[in-house]
Image (cartoon, rainbow, N blue to C red; front, side, top):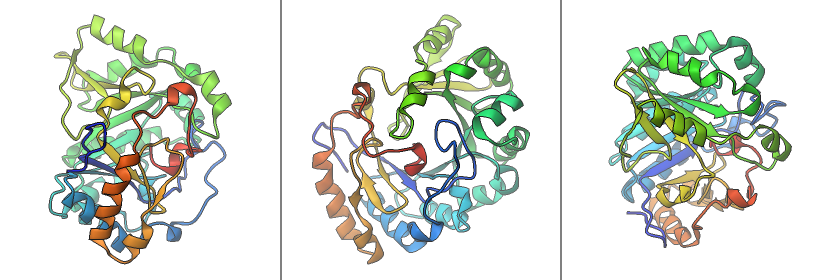
Length: 322
């Protein structure tokens, strides 16, 4: 089992397979993507080597991220190989959801267990303003398709000051009858977005207090769960989670490592630099990958230090998929 010097164990791999995205979210790529093509990123054989190595070291969950992972033509193949790697018990992805209505059933057949979809507003005009795409109804249709295909669905919503009014009430009304988990995520500062962060950051704590006051109850975290504090209510079909990276001891429960689409290992979303894994991956060297990762964990820090204004080498979230 992978373990760092602070006793944290790592059951969870977040694997980016592309930096490209065709949305223009205000908090990520407001000017659109202008980076390397998918041919520059990890190939399927390298991804197989990587997941095999992590699985042999105790990783049980893989989340496939981007950018927008569905922009890769071999996305279903990536899902299939992850799902069929011995030791991997859950395969998830994070997506903007625009292809769900067409591809959710195919992804489920390939072995996808869970999908996280980014929906920052249920108001079509707000959604288009935030993302640069007028595709809310298409995405909601895709969520229904995913639920029908047996995929567990979570919704990611970034808290933004300009769009905060009445948003919680609208989402709560939606969750009455919609069996998904909605996670409110505090905006995180990245290298390209210091000014945007200072204008738009909103704490999730008032939402947590409101939920508790209205009878929402906390759920226990699974060992391979993400960082959200999750709540349920007997009167709602859906659940709510809060991801508050600026809260005290947020990093204490860290259980995940990240590999970027270029093959670099990141010990933290906000680490200063990635560690070069690709020579081992290109050679199919599973044992070399395992040794490199095990030795690298000695350098994992106790915190992301976001609360001190530290953003590391992360210019925008599409680099590592959040």
